[in-house]
Amino acid sequence: MAGRKPLAAGFAALTLLAIVPSATSAATNDPLRISKPVNMTKADLAPTRTYGSPFLLVDPHNKMNVVAATVEMRSRACLVFRSADGGQTWRQLDNLPAAPSYPFCFQTSGSVTESPMAWGRNGTLYIAMAAWDVQDGGDARGNLSTVVSRSTNLGDTWQTTLARNNRGKTLGDIETDRPVSGVAVDSTSGNEDIVYVTYRRNLSSATPSVNPRPMVQVSTDGGKTFGDPADVSAEWVKDPKNITGTFPDDKKTAANVGGYNPVVAVGDDGTAYVLWERRSVGVTPSANFAYYLARSSDKGKTWATSEAFAETPNLAGGFIVWSKGPSPQGTVHLAWHAKPGQTQGETDIYYRNSTDGGKTFSPAKLLNDDDPKALASQFLPAISVAPNGRVDVAWWDFRDDPGNYVNDVYYTYSNDNGKTWSKNIRITDRSVNRKIGPWSNGFDMRQPPGVASTNELAIFAWDDTRNGNVDTQSQDMFSSAAQFKAIGGGANGAKYALAALGGVAFVGLILVVVALLRRDRTPGPAKTKAKAKAAEESVKVQS
Image (cartoon, rainbow, N blue to C red):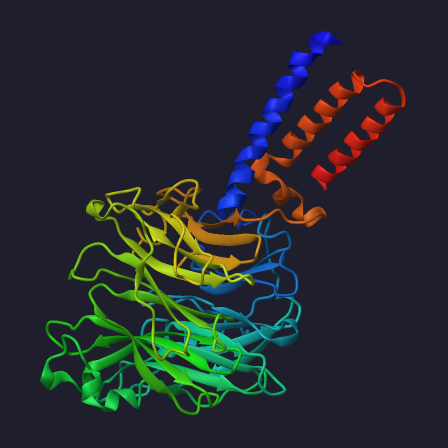
């Protein structure tokens, strides 16, 4: 038996090396590991498949259930995928959220988000989409309507409401409402969910011309019916004093201001927040963009607007979420990309928040930590907040390719409500080749990467061309997760539980071998007791 002592010591040392990194990570609040990406769309074998980056949500009643809403660009349909194991495996749901008479939701240009989702009470899932058919004249200049669908069974079946019906409008009245960029639900006020859906209204064929406007529609009966659309910038734009920055004095009128890409969040007190992008129309040279926040405390009847962050070059991609605490009004979180001080070139990711209902905001914080001298671009951030308050922000990043033909998903998080942020973490295991897929084919389709949060995981999803080539131009969806805590027993959590230690099977095998080696040196009843304990520990590790 003496000859086996070095072998046992060697395995014990290897086990220690496997455990120490996870203990260090836990102590510093860093993720235990980044999981290997999985192909969400591997069941689709069509060579021309082209999936966009999805919108992600975690089921508030079961953190292992994750839903993803996306567009398949060739079919122009909105699809929903679901995972029952925290994003490790996925399947496409059979039923589509769109109405049969409005089967298409994809728009080839001008989009910032596609098919946003939100939870209501009693596990109701809402998804908002642009909606059209061939008879509506196409997605660029035709009539696009707005649909909100809801499901009470995680997307297995859907009930669809036509929130804004533009079908049949003719020249002068054609309304191209795109993108449908936001949906949020007040599930605490009244007896039924109050649902807010936001989109950009386009009346390009109107005479005289009408600029794009940030619109919101509200349902007070759980998404069954919606009121007329309201322009959240309507009152603000009437006063020229509100139009600041590089606007010439003679252009400070409603006719020269456009409102783009509104996104919406709702606080527990029922206050709705709409973040929208102010642009110039008919101004040469064009004024820089700015972001404004419209607030309503009366279910969307009236809106008060104030500047969320000042006019900045290359500003776009704004995203908003609301979370509880630390103040009674909660926190409004904002993220966007911009390049202050430059009129062109690379952009960076910024964050700020408000804890007084949007009246004031914290100073802007730069989130990407790459070398500014490299002039790499980062754009289109998405935000999610875990139940424990961890703020997760993910974005597209070109730091690993100075030629701007491939990009990655990068990520940072904050454990103190946005005061400080972690180092940037690369989520993609390989860069996405943008010479393949929609970008190379002229779509220039750019959606934020998806991100959804639990206390244990930050789950990500993105569009990826690794399985495509110049002939097929195919694009799939991939997902991965940053793991912060072990997920407790059960089949669903097993793969995540000790993955940071080098794999469940590997660690379990080490413990079993060590136990067996020790058993040979243990006499009589003690050996039997040690064997039982080793078996028990092995079961714990693998369960």
